[in-house]
Length: 330
Image 1 (cartoon, one colour):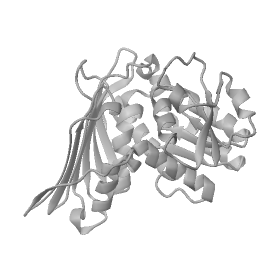
Image 2: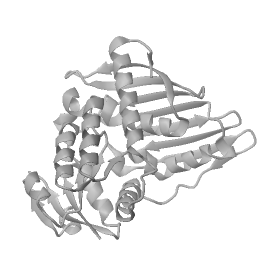
Image 3: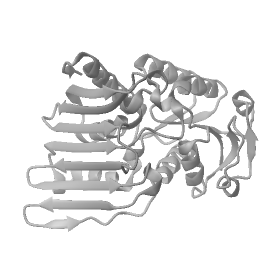
């Protein structure tokens, strides 16, 4: 049984707390949050200790794992402190906003002999797991083209998302999902080219990126925090091979907590087949895997840290392309 200190109780923190209720070999022993907890939804899910001081939480000897669900600009300091306290760390994506910061984080966890896991959720999302499985079989062999999009409004639950120095904008908060999964699917990237728009604070809030891969595949990826009020959070993913195509479409509420209409279809030249959506929660899949890796000292083969770093490298290259208007070779 692993004891978890959950840090941050915003949207993602609450999603993590709910997911832990279904994971048998761990429990949330403490929640670190500065605000008053008035959410009636939280009380039935938690009977541990609320802590306002992060340093105090780290002094709790019974805490094995720190789960960081804080704004991105606080990740590096929080992870470094946790590592020095001898705690394993689970951190929501993005790990950080620069390659130099990521290298400092990796050094801190390595020097202190603790594990670090970064939550790239699509790798654990049931439909995307099926897409990955199909890509490794003759059903979707040698993917040539991928189209992916993730469209929504700017997150309404906190203002920090709007500031580029705090969140990285839609580039690091939203675009990262598809960029990470597509590189997981297709391998190394040869070049990127991107265009987009910025919000009033200078954060990229609508991005369209073309990626060319070393295996000659191509991907066209769109992300937006710029959609008008009432526009449903929408995500879609289409992968096309010579003889077949797979497509997944979702329309939700303002965010992923209210997923409504889903379509998941596989096409070849002879048939069109609806794919049964597998029951399962991506957050539960992700967190249970991370806990299992810690308990058994197993290697993290789904999202190793070198993949985390590579995804950040792609995002920084996309950012350069956005700023310069040029195609960037990786």
